[in-house]
Image (cartoon, rainbow, N blue to C red):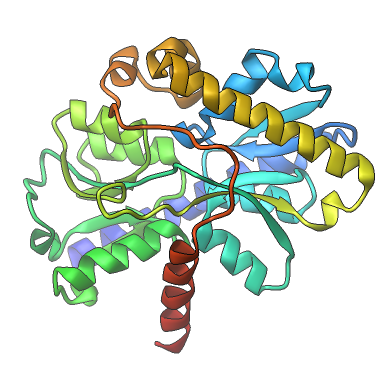
Length: 302
């Protein structure tokens, strides 16, 4: 009972914090109707956009791009739905939910967004079966919810005895993990690497499972004019050039950008997995789309 009460309080606190962030980020920011605005996160999948902006690749392709940084994917969603941005970096579960609600989206590219289930050093959890009666941070109707459900199912745990806590802010998740407030969390890079360096244990990695659920999506209605389409074409060209630059020079060459935009330590950047690569803009894989569709169908029917 005590843990249930703690879970409810934590959930209410996180939802309240997230609502406040949406209000501050969206309602008080003037809309620049000329630039192509893209909602981004402090995560490594967004690095090509940070590189393109910092190295002037957007300007060299004659496209005015504004990157709007949020701390949670649900804030990116809200910004897109309210017309504050034309595009966003997100995950396939969130975007498919939006599409099913009748909001047309165009998938400009899949991304290398990945997640790892990381457990607190204090929790002493070394295998998924030990998540029984533990608190796991995730976000409802997102890839993290799909992954949390997959982990519990494969471990044959009773979902009623794993406490899923909605923590939307990725920086808050990292802080809660490092301080032992939460038992386990689904973390993207580079925050997952910083958690590993702090002695946390990794139970699951979507890269190892060949799951690619990251996506760059744009509002279809916002791209109807020839001007916006031309902007998007130039945007994709600059994005691809940034991917080539990162792959050629390595993540270490962009250490300052990663520490600045992702809020992690330089040592974290130096310890990032060597296999991280960035592909040119291309649609999400059919297998990943089917994984999401099947999970959403099962959730609706349950």
